[in-house]
Image 1 (cartoon, rainbow, N blue to C red):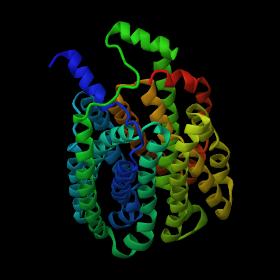
Image 2: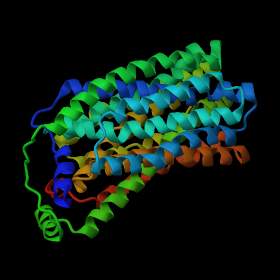
Image 3: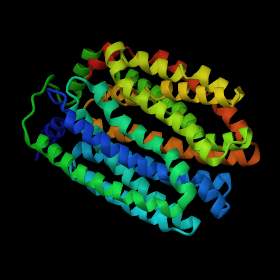
Image 4: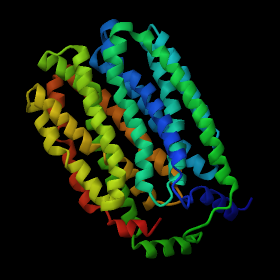
Length: 418
């Protein structure tokens, strides 16, 4: 096949559907929920593992790092490869790695084996996210913000279930209770087979091209004129988005990994009670994720990105200086506002670099996972030599980086590229 034909073939898979295909969007959202529910069993086990295996905060952070760094490194590679050669049936195959990791996590008696188990879960996640995000793009029709939010909210709901699992399951059953989530993996595999068949059918169908795109240097110049953005402006915008993702995910890592320890140590609550506070934070984040997409479709991607990151700062800063009740309120409000950003950042980046949907999806999902894992490890090390309260106060100021959004190009210029 010639280079031009390959380009046209790859480009056809990135062409959005004429209408929004809700059954597919809800299907991948459900799988995202199941995938992140299984992932959340790792952080949900932290209090149990720390007690049973006498782990330090640094070792807890390394568990998160092993899972998230694996996913972070692999996701851009999977996404880049799928831009050239889309792989529908890699979707169910990826969940098989997660299934193996869940079974290993349930029965691993040693720290080293736990690291191996979470690495397998990280591989499954790395395969899942780029291709599933591409499916969301294909099924979005004209509502890309809404489609990405539907996809993302499943993951947020799954993540929010982790604290409940600790409170009602792992506290009573222990580590082996994770084995029940192997059934979730089997359900996810079945749904992914259905999604993969739809995805494969889209590749075989001739799809209308909304905007003809020229190939080569002349074509790239034409695209830049149409969108009124130079290559330097596009690169600068992506760099800003990367910093925004870093600020968001390091703060999220501080909350998901250490907020429960903070509540236990500084407020004297039980393990079960602390998990309900974390559930409230993550549940609010799920609602924020779902509403972020439609709000961006209505009020503009740049405006919602700005509001989401910077708007979290007042609540994150007040949280470590509040009493128990108001700490919970600040967590809920901060989680709701902060999580409306990520799905919009992904869509905004996809429109900055059309034709590289897999690469962008893999890069930003991978970055989110990597920064989250690295943040957990670094924060755990700092907590061992300082205190959990110091970590909460340190991370409280990260959302102030949202001010960087002022330098993002306006939506009209970015959407001229897509």
